[in-house]
Image (cartoon, rainbow, N blue to C red; front, top):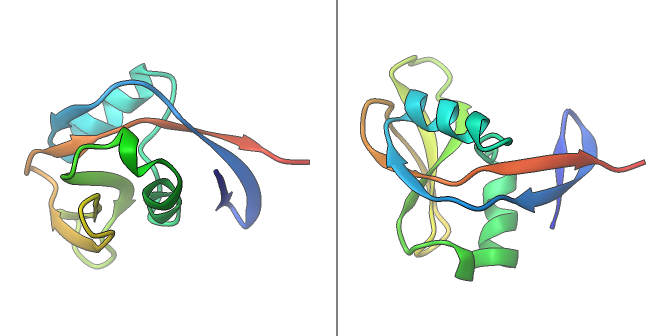
Length: 102
């Protein structure tokens, strides 16, 4: 699907793999897969365009919660909602790659 990164349009590519990890470990794991965790903007795009590729569970985004370093944002692939949660909690992770569009 199409998304936005750094105020520019990007093609969002969903990479294979799905792990349940704390946030810091999830970010590192996504990097080893050749990608990164989706942003809070990417997550609704993935929910709309590729929901069948996800378990009906909570997935980390790459974004920490402003104002509290111990929390990060996650996206629910049951109903499409977003909330923040403690980074040391184990939620699912799915890597993506963003390809800039000309």
